[in-house]
Image 1 (cartoon, helix red, strand yellow):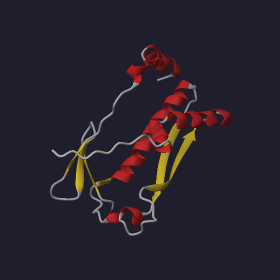
Image 2 (cartoon, one colour):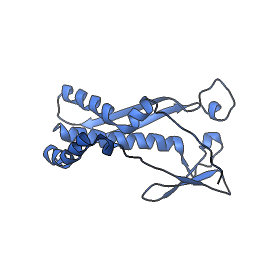
Image 3 (cartoon, rainbow, N blue to C red):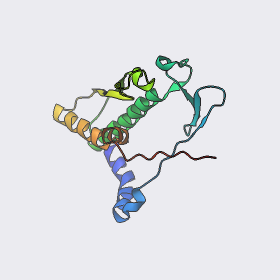
Image 4 (cartoon, one colour):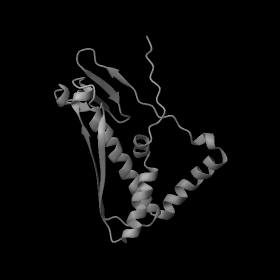
Length: 169
């Protein structure tokens, strides 16, 4: 897809959202079912069922997906798609691109070993390796706009309002 095709594809969508801003607000959903026999949760990804469980550093077998890994994978996926879309829109040819995310966790927090240890990632690093002949100023713009428009990055960066409920069923 080139920049003109992308603009043509998105133009009517953008026009609709300008005319009816409420139409741009979409609720995405995910659900999972707790496994009765082990510490795991089965999730439907839209493509397949996956099973998430404890990370080996907290007692898991390593056979199930770790939700922390899934968070980083979601960040990589979103950042990669956003990078490619922005590069396409700006006519920046990319011969190749690799996106990597890594994050540091202190499992003392999630295991309740140390109340002072944070629960969750204390640092996440997102790296892009690209092969292109584009000048550095274009790459700087590409990075800035990728960061700006990546939904997962912005969600992590600016904590959304969270609501947690327990329903008896």
